[in-house]
Image 1 (spheres, rainbow, N blue to C red):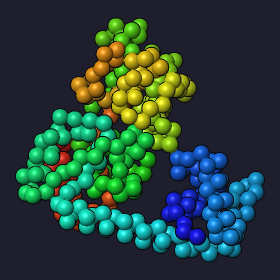
Image 2: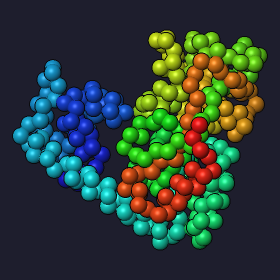
Image 3: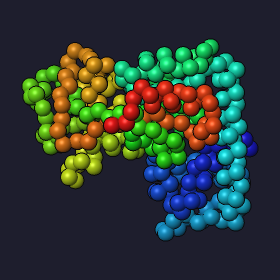
Image 4: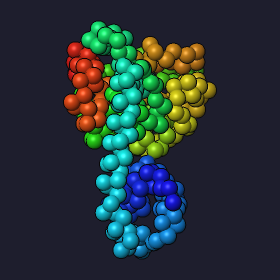
Length: 298
């Protein structure tokens, strides 16, 4: 049986958590989907890996044997994949830069220009990620470095340097009653349906719904989108309102959508992020220095 590394990651999460529920939350997948994948792995290996009970999931003897090997297998595969992709980038003299939405706003072009000055013959290839991947490709080693917005799932395993902050504003349908105001207190939006990122984005979704800043007031979700164009369409069509960086009013204009300052919510933070293995990668560190010199954290 050829085993998908995803199955091994799922197995490791269940083994470590001892619970399908907790493992599903950690992996940002549904519990039924996780159960299906664990059974698929067991069927492929021809062995029962867990004893299931009301108290959780306990490793069987075959499960313990696999659990001893999986961490090294996953670490080895991740290292091989990253090294292969990095070697391909070096050969092409391309630095893969992931980003979310407007990246570092107006600072993006100066950062890229400064990188080109520091690294003649190199090119920063900008790769926009969907909101379903708020790590902007770092989580799957699809990029070498990324311009991200905090917080996002998995950031604790990465190197992160905050570059600057900016207020969160509200994006509303143009005909919305609150659109006539100059400033909107956040509590006036609590009962509104919100346009949200996919549930699997975890902390990212919760942050842009300001779930922790509602004094326990429940969130209403009117639509779920992954891309800026779909997000704008959902708002313009009246499916909900949303929180957005102040810069969205400059980068994501659209007829039928208005932006207004909001009080009572914390600011958004833009950061540059990279994998710890690239602490000694001179090209990645040159890009990080370009980011730091163009913007300092606020």
